[in-house]
Length: 93
Image 1 (cartoon, helix red, strand yellow):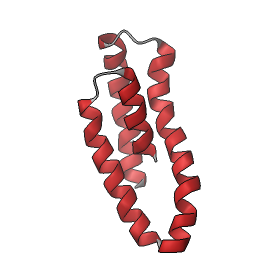
Image 2: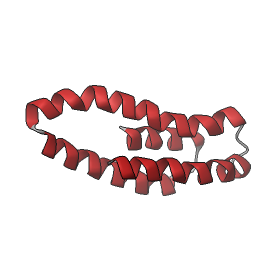
Image 3: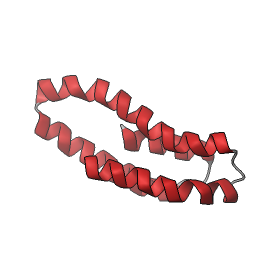
Image 4: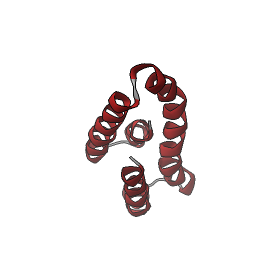
């Protein structure tokens, strides 16, 4: 998961300036697209760590891997700033 998180941040470093230009986003909005992934990671850690202890880490790892993949793909279908914030949050989760 660490490699996929790193790839997600790298993707956003290239995607943010393009979306800022295409969607007329402010610098703060552009920065928020990157930051929301880390907020999702923090919330996900707080929620999924106890579940990993209860159900086992393997099943949680599979769920997290599937979530990262699914929401990573859904990022390409976002058409609004709000959508991309929600989807990127879930990528971090």
